[in-house]
Image (cartoon, rainbow, N blue to C red; front, side, top):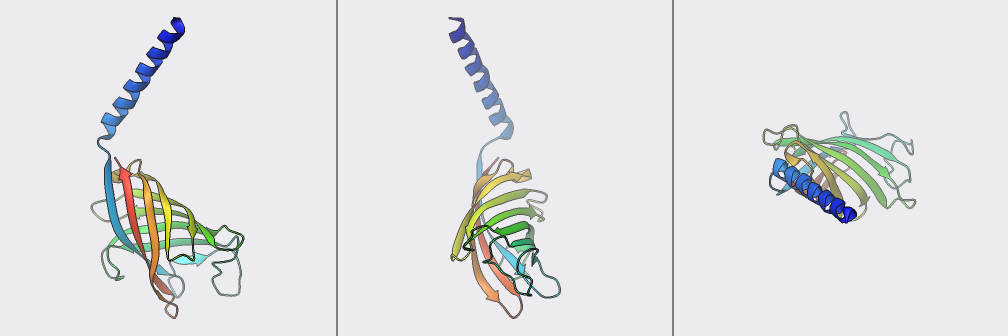
Amino acid sequence: MASSSFKLSFLLLLAIFICSNAVELGQLKETSMTLYFQDWFGGPNPTLIQITGRSDGFMSYEKFGTVFVTDDPVTIGFDGSSAQVARAQGMYVTSALDGSISHVMISLVFTNEEYKGSTLQIQGASPQFERVREVAVVSGTGKFRLGRGHATFETIHIDVEKSYCVIQSNVTVLHY
């Protein structure tokens, strides 16, 4: 009898705790956005650099163990001169032996007025030679507190001579 009374008391306390946290956080919201990563992989001010791997001057995306770091400006439009809303800061690691997968670890650090100081943490295995790659949104801060969802990446423009590409990202996140 005492065991069943203890279980009931524990479940009641757990329910109160869960409900009180839900009230503090507010309603779950969904935010979807299309963003454009302005990626400079060469030239005088690169925003993506290779820090390990082949050292013959060429980026080696398909070599196992190659690590890249990035700090791309993120804009609301395709054109690099459109309004900047965030920075994409993080790293990519070629994590498949055959070079087909890059592990992505990126923080979207928002700089625009609406979301300034908020972040989204994006992480996952990205099949780097697929047209569209999907990874998880695993967390968020600020306006995206406790965020979770998914993000797709698609390289929609590349200019090898200028060492420049534009990556479109569609992000859907549930948050409080």
